[in-house]
Image: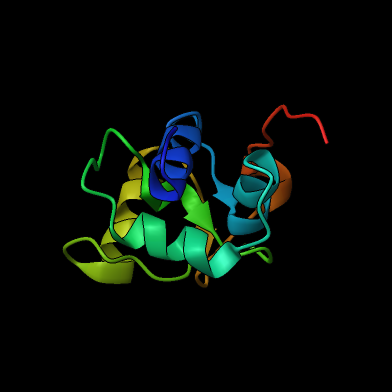
Length: 104
């Protein structure tokens, strides 16, 4: 059985280039409301960029933190390089949000 971190990383791999998802969407997709634990799993991601943890943002579109080299500024640059527009640290979720297919 996969560990919690592995489940988070596996689901994160499904976020397409040029899109973002939220901690809540990611949690719903793996049937978990442990959003802080999801953040912890992403912060310990040893598989970047194959596991694109930079594509996970806060529920209101705020970019949030990034534990990779360069921190939040590096996260913004990675997202912009993929075509995600960011204004004042906020991603337009209506345009860029990736929703997972899952059953409740």
